[in-house]
Image 1 (cartoon, rainbow, N blue to C red):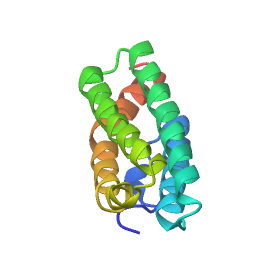
Image 2: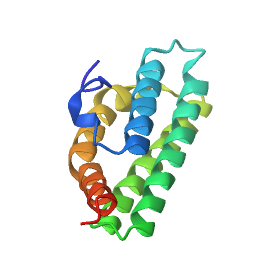
Image 3: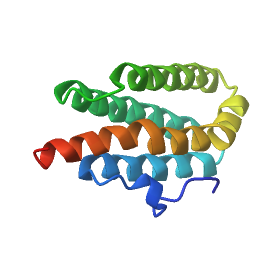
Length: 133
């Protein structure tokens, strides 16, 4: 699956909670992409809920630990959540085709870039704090 292998080292950032959440996210994205028409709506909704929790947890870490690029990072989260909300509404209205295409063609590349940039900066900051630097 395009850019979505939980064993890919770019998704392991050295922070147990972030790494676990990323692995869960990847698995849920993969399951949703592969879902048949009857399972897709519930799985997309579960992915949307997981992503909201995932982003909220990261944002709490950023605020608590005065992480760099917090505003930019949160803005990216907000943009993706807004996309997911709109796609979820389309799915619920019986129009899943655009959501499927976005999930397959856009989200994996976005997640790879987001993880190797903003999430990587966050994880490095948290590791430095933990090491007392």
